[in-house]
Length: 159
Length: 94
Image (cartoon, rainbow over all chains, first blue to last red; front, side):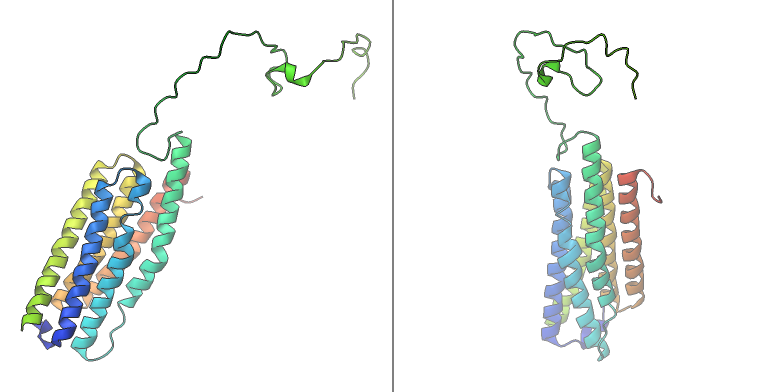
């Protein structure tokens, strides 16, 4: 590491601050990825590294190479712009996929399977009229009074 | 020469921190209860490896590490999008 000797001292201290802050934020993001409980909490943690970690380290790299080569070196900004564009897309798609998978498997938004609800006592069993079952209506009593059966209408041709 | 020493220590700390971050993400990738956890862990591994390559390039003064970091960023994005599509639909190309 003898190429860093051409830096001004203030710039060296600023660059080291940026580097330490960015890498610490990325490390915190991975720590949150390990420690948080559910997937939707874990989706938030590494974005520290995706946004601030990348921003700070790219800025430090740009400043260091610009000061070393005595000319503006801005090609690291490609990585910053790329991460700025692509990270919301990929995380949005991943979150939507997780929502869909949770909905398909009837899980809540958590890792654990939710406990069964306590079974409510339905009271004494009542007989139900199930003659219209299959037409989308279980309880025929909702229809009100049914018209009396007319045997003559059975003979009429139907359209 | 004290600021140079501080910069060298900072770069060493940052590289070690990124390696530790990759290790933690690998733990989540191995452990992860469901598939989306593993995809998120692989995305985090890609980003942390990209930052690690940038830091190694800063330490070496080498420009080629920047190109490697760019390739890793592109590959990580494509990997995550394809895995998310697969998790959502069951197929990648519809």
